[in-house]
Length: 235
Figure 1 (cartoon, rainbow, N blue to C red):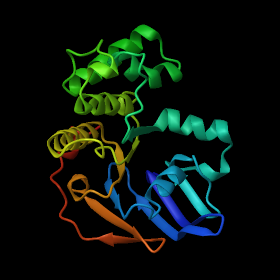
Figure 2 (figure 1 turned 180 degrees about the vertical axis):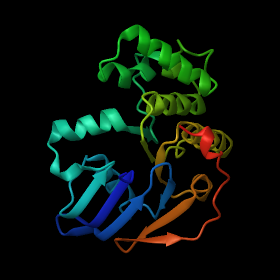
Figure 3 (figure 1 turned 60 degrees about the vertical axis):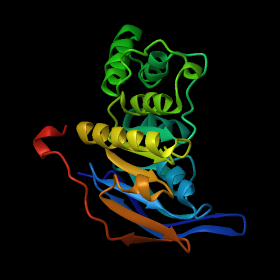
Figure 4 (figure 1 turned 30 degrees about the horizontal axis):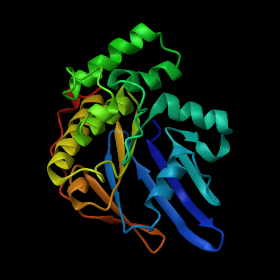
């Protein structure tokens, strides 16, 4: 079985600015990895390469066995749509859609019937504690609630890989911890792999492995693995 993410010898530059140099990374299925580094160190660039939003100048990027850089735009979009969930710092909720409608979006894009999508979206919102806020618009939700809607949207199609880019950067410490607990427990429940880009030590604690990006390369850091549910409890 292919790993969730595999980068080998990846190099990426923007003009004369070298961002990543001979970077290699392997993330197993179900593994939670925190990618740390200072602002501007290339963390988001690496995440964009995994997502197929950028192409490497050298090396290769595989996601669940798919060579992202070798696919055309439609192929990369299909991998993202079918296998990947995204959680962003800015949430990117659609302002004119309710919570449940926002969570429906990935399912509708995948061709699911509207009534089936509505039921699944409501189930996931209930799972993140928002069963009573299905019809609320984003402006009617707190930052922490919006983050939970974004998490439900990222996981509603049961992806095998979740990419999170500073998902708690806009939250106060208390709401950030609630969101992180929700991310960890929900991902554990559905068995997805996680690549979490962050500069926050608080956020990094939900990962079982930490990798720091510095001087255009990756270095593993020792970390005590957080407790995990028995394998039989995972998908």
